[in-house]
Image: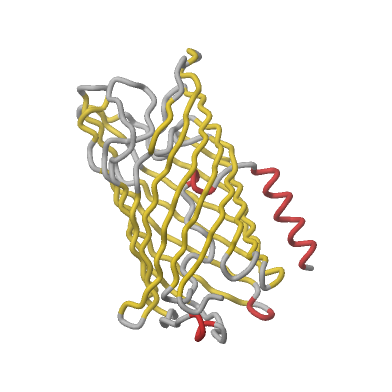
Length: 306
């Protein structure tokens, strides 16, 4: 059963051939419990072909782009009101090239994208446990909430069609539930609801004001633990709305996006983890059409780790 399931996830990965960070997925099992007092540094590499830059909420009309992106992310797990909570910060560094409306862009953009900051907490089923206590923890259904803030710190030139930064703030609240089930609770099903809210870009195309409505998202993930060190997941995300206006003129471009993906998480030892993520936008009405992949390395440390 386990080997057959791994094969299914690999086939899905090959068919999908894309990228979770770029798809704006929240990771599967994200709102499951984790030991507190733990630090993590995550190094990501992602490649995508798309019609958008790092900010996937906005497409570039007529664009065919290639994006190489590296991301450095730091996460700290801690106890808050005796519940598991965590905070993280990330900075992407990317290179972007391609064409718009068939015209080749004769320069490559290399620089930082917008940085992001998140705080999250388990509201139910997430008692704060240190590494030693967590060794005997049996997973239960948990509910969590988070807020992610993206700051306009990325490279942005108002007179350029392509940018790595978006020159605006965004705020993404999310609530999620994680439910383990089956023999030895090897299966986990996750469901998330989120929405991204944006401030105005007042220097869009140098002199215009870009405004965007909230972009709402629904996510579902189902994962299976083949062994204690290997689990794989099938991911889906549907997002809608996000209409834009320029100088008060409605662009009539509300989005409908359906993304499928898969993920494989391999624990090399308690400190080191490898993650392979794949996704593809199957439906992208006024949204991001892309394919790509992501590879992540996670290093964990803290009191109690050997």
